[in-house]
Length: 487
Image (cartoon, rainbow, N blue to C red; front, top):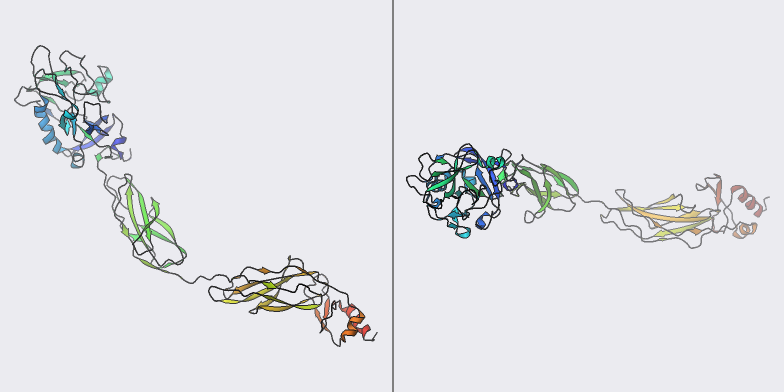
């Protein structure tokens, strides 16, 4: 079995306790307080009985007296035997009061409850191993105990097997014949039946000590009962010597050991206040974990300790304080506040677009990029890239609509969000001969229109604003030459 608590061992279970430097087997014979005949010291207690006899002893050396209070074996159990029990168990034996016949001879008076006999180590009574007043006329008529749950009543094979052991052993119950005084004591034979011997019988009988332990004691995998001890402190803790804010680091530590083999895991804590306050960031069985150190944290320290299945914890192993390196983190500029374009736009004219100033937390604003769409926002053309807050754009004749959008960018290439204008539908008026005559046009400019991907034709521009004055080259030349009387 794995390490567990004594309280988890069932009645009838076997545990091992060191007595006189030798591991001896003990049977769990009862759990808790058997009845009101016992004091409250039995509450939550685990009653264990040595599986085999310890040695052969007289009930009373040189005194023909069956009074357990005054018996030699009681003195022996509280002195020699008690001191032979390993200290880690001895120090945890519960002090209880047990029901015991008062006096000697054939007296039937029993002291019980809070008036019972105080005991650290004791021997079972006939009632506790499953006999009662009906067994014999020589039985104590006032019960000096209640049957412990491991034992069965009567003389069935199983009942006798549970009582019996390698040799006969004493009970603490006197034999009390009704018509004579006979200082004898009941014994349990090896086959589990009952017999009796004189209190000072020279042959003596075996002794099987009994005591009560708390349920919190540990039982190791080999059955040994012991106390729980804390794990050892982890031998080291390793933290990176250089830590950058905004990164994840790995912390590792050495393995702890545990004498009871019930190490459960580790708890890791972090301090960002130089050790004045701590926060647990990990609990588990691993000997390393990751931790995210946020940007802006000034310093970190870590400490780790082990814990076992019973909640005992080791001391802390603490790292040095590490100052965190926090580089400046670049952030995008803010989106330009506004974008302004004319509410009325004519084809063949140049318009002005302006926008609001962006800000940049790191002071590295580099400029703006302006884009134009003539198909309702499906495709966009970059028409400006620079630090200014305004520029111009030529609107070609025949353009159905225009939309502009602008965003800022910084020296590290981060972009703001877009600020987008409303869609404005372009006014396109066909030129007439009269337009050109009145305008007194004397020159033209011819260039390729990159937005006219469908026809790839050349467009012309006039040096003055004439509504609707931009047309295809052939048509323009025809109108222009006609207006000058050249054709």
